[in-house]
Image (cartoon, rainbow, N blue to C red; front, side, top):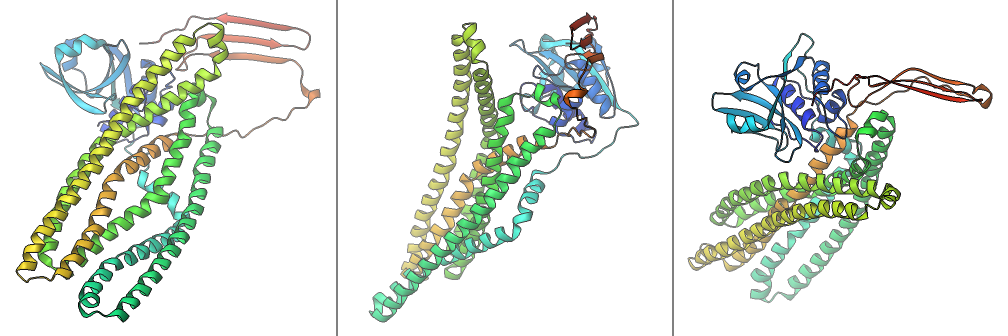
Length: 515
């Protein structure tokens, strides 16, 4: 199972998600981070073993050589060192005499390497695992579309009104095609001034109705958007306050804050884009059906056009899916770095590391700019491709339609009406293609936001209220401290007295940490 890590520290958790999914257990990476004690430096091998045990696996860390790879149970997790000297975890799924198939969470895909190439980066450390009697096949993840529905459900009546208003607005917009047809058929040929005035008044009334519907729809959408913003952002903040301190110790402040921006992107999609998607789909179907009432042969040409638009959308979706997530993660990383560097500006000045801090920011910003450049190129591809197709097939339809007019199969006014309908067809199709970026942004933002919302809260049931008279000597006994996994490093005895303060720190060697 392919799983892509969310940031540089998530490779171990992503590997656990992959092997768990292989056996039928789907679990969010954010929750796995908690189980295997992932911190800002990543996850150690002991943390992976303990995380697997909590997920219902028997697991152990071993060290071996290349000959052992063909004998171990698969899948297994391997510890490697990348060419840039960063430590990394991958999942081994298949081993032969010459090739090895691994799932690399850095790219979120399965790759095949030669045994010789793998031996150059493998440290010899493996995490072997197998399900035990406590393992359960279940899906602890929630579909993003289900989450979107839960956000829409409390406001579904308002959304329905806005959707109906948008559809009526769109249908009234098709009156332009009928207006052109009536003018060319009856007004210009017969010189019917009375009909011309009647059509003029009707079109003005339709325009006023459109403006009224548009204003009401915008107000409804605005009110709903504020409610969704309040639910998402305040709900996210309330959830943060319920999370254990360990979450804040292992998560950068900028990463936490960046989720607020993700909430806004989700609201924009639900509140604005989703309605527009339904409207555009309706316009495409309605205008396509209306074309058959004019001339079915020209309508069949439009049917062929849809396949080309679908190809452009597929390519756009594939490009955006990769680049937009990368851009969002790099943007959050830059924001996190800026927040932390500004909070530590006193330390930076005292140690004279302004140049180092500036270079680090410049490097992150340059990386982000490169990704933004790729994102803009994708947008240019989608917009220009859809525009090219729209213009090309408009030219083709007018060319073919002119032959039908010459052969007396259709009238010139029918061709003009058909031409007006082409605009109502191609415009929403082009919008659907360009909307792909917004859709991908919303899906990625929802994935990032709800991975935090899925974390288990820390419920404090017992609280002690103390007055000034109750406060006396404070004794800390049997307190343990460690990094990452709960492996104990220090045992602390601390006595705070009103009269005197004593601190004894007993250090104990208990470092049994695997790479």
